[in-house]
Image (cartoon, rainbow, N blue to C red; front, side, top):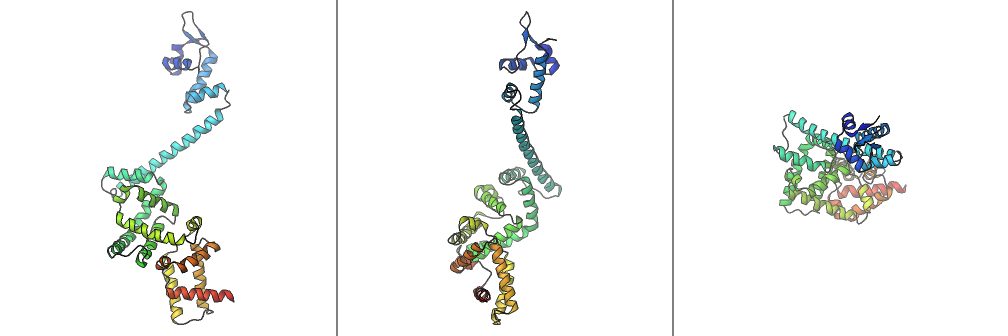
Length: 335
């Protein structure tokens, strides 16, 4: 059976122009021509055309189809693998978009308007956030923000007061505030330091996020300056890799330990007393956690804190507590 080009186009749903193009690029040549010069397609041509259409439905380009047919399908597995990868990326983008739209829909349905009350600004913020976080991460951050939002205003107020009072970034006031900032931030982000670093990068690189947040530029710059003081001091003793491994212990944990140790120190409780032993062990546990259970980092950290006033400034442990713990630990270790 031989089909003219018009009949083949009608049966396959393609246009005559498309079949002409296939012929021009060598993808599908008709097997013959009529006496009048019309293209004629036989069964093998029709079978090849069905193969071409099947591959087109998979999203392959005409060049990829040409290569696959020329190599008798040898390149097809690789081509399909690439198509699957591209589809996976498209699906992920679609899911991300769906999650973002659900976030907006949920806020509207709950009666809570977008952050600024301005749809265009809110969507712009969403687009900016999406450059740094997945939709799943954004959902977690928004939900946690509602949970922890009340923790920020008092801290911001204290930061603003420290700035007005002229407290330098390496002062005790600034360093205690920096540690509180870090603690609240990590609580907000479920302890994920990578998220915290990305959020900080976004605040520094995207002015719109600072303009629409409750943290003004002056406070943010003060925090970064104070944080840099701590980092510079620590990097005198730790490598960048070791610094990245440090973990943050909450202020309350240090304060509870400090109050208990100061009570023993005031009462001159001997180091071998069971209460002293328990507090020394608690101190060691907190240090192990801070140093990511790395003895070398722990030793360097102790030296850094002992040597650098800026690190001591941020500690909830008083000088009396530090001296008692170091002395008790040394004596207990020697026995």
